Amino acid sequence: MSTWNDPPGGFHPVSAPDYLPRPQLEALQLQRLQQVVWRSYDRVPLTQSRMTERGLTPASIASLADVARLPFTVKADLRDTYPFGLFASPMEQIVRLHASSGTTGKPIVVAYTQADLDVWSEVMVRAFVACGVHRGDVIQNAYGYGLFTGGLGAHYGGEALGATVIPISGGNTERQLMVMADFGVTAICCTPSYFLHLLESAKETKTDFSKLRVGIFGAEPWSDSMRERIQDESGIRAHDIYGLSEIIGPGVGIECREQRGLHIFEDHFYPEIIDPDTGEVLPEGAEGELVLTTLSKQAMPMIRYRTRDITALVSDKCGCGRTLRRIRRIGRRSDDMFIIRGVNVFPSQVETALLRVEGTLPHYAIVLTREKGLDQMEVKVEVTPEVFSDEIRKLEELQTRLEASIENILGIRVKVTLVQPRSIARSEGKAKRVTDNRSQ
Amino acid sequence: MKLQQLSLFLENRSGQLREPCELLAAAGIDLMTMSLADTTQFGILRFIVRDPAAAKKVLEEAGMVVVMTEVVPVEVDNRPGGLARALAAIEDAGLGVEYMYDFGAASRGGKAAIIFRFEDPDAALAALSKAGIRVPTVEELLAS
Image (cartoon, rainbow over all chains, first blue to last red):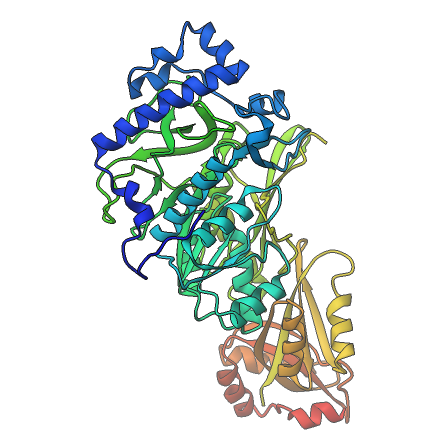
């Protein structure tokens, strides 16, 4: 994809679709929806058989509302058709494959034609622009390069924007900090938990990151309080980026300067919110599971893909002028949720509780065990210099305050254990917060 | 005269004390005295060294959490009733003691030194001086 000749700080031509009047945007969406349904119906046997079961043909899709008549696609469908069963393009036209790091069994595979890669770069350029990143910026891309979509997605988007991209990939904190200081990095892409780790190390080593202005953080849910902490401690603007490999990778949605939800690039990805239990489409503003349909994908169209991410769609006017609807920041995935003593718990709730207690950085781990048939939840929290005291009494008070704060939010008693700094493994990709030992 | 004590957070499991001790050893820092307070879950190692700033730096560079606190060494007679006399003076002055421990082999001339962590070290110094209880200097402690 060629680069775009943009004036620094000004309107970027590639962002034009972000500002389309709604009627034109919806007309475009319908046209693309009909095309993608035809494509999938014609070329993907699973789509055709499921539509046929429901008495549907592509001609049944006469309006955007008709999308609700289409069958869902779920992650298991990608596993069941592993590796290439959902492809809608012949291999000669597929120029790239990515795969998810499957924790159980086979990974899932996703495919791109050159046109798909161009769309991906386009939405990433629009995402960077929405965060105020431009030509002249130096982007440290600390997402993992490889089968994971994060690295290459941000990489090609950054290059298409005309910014300087440092393909450093994840890990090797020392080298990250050296590059950040020596190359005058102005924007960084990585997971929020890895950035916190970098920030901590930068403070210890007194690394100069004064030029860093923007962070684009994604690939895991993070809370508003974590954002405040990142912004307060580093002085940068921290933007949430949303995406998933099944849809395209990073660049499905982005927070603009208003930081009030993430704009979905609706001309390429059609969002719906459903009740995760019944599958019914929920009215706008209601919280539920995000479902996405790719409107322009060729190699692997996704019809009503269930993301497992819990959010709500917002359509009130955004201060940035974009007409694209927004999703609320995703604090939780229905995947991350665990049930303890009958209570649904999301790690983000624990995070909020920990942050409420002054001075505790969110380096924590949740361990679930079963003792004498009863579920136990332990939260390990690293001691920081801010909260440490030479008096046992004060540390025990801290433990009690943390336990009370968690109980206050979850409604269940948990045990808080203070642990040494750096004893909890740092993630360089997605943070693994929960260890469930209950089946042992 | 007040001393700077260092305190270090430790998890209560085997092997936790070894690393800080080895780090201090490698830096040529001698532990003059120490005391370990523990609960079932964690412990706090409190210790005194000649150069607390250097020791703090060594441990913090290894990622440990260390705080520096002012403590007061108090000279007591090394015989029955010696400590009781000092404690009476402290209590009479209405001072709160957070914790205390013995200053190792600091027994000389029939005297021993006890390290006190007071809520208010300056008020404690004044009260001890008023009661005629001596506070040894760093040099005296180090000479022992």
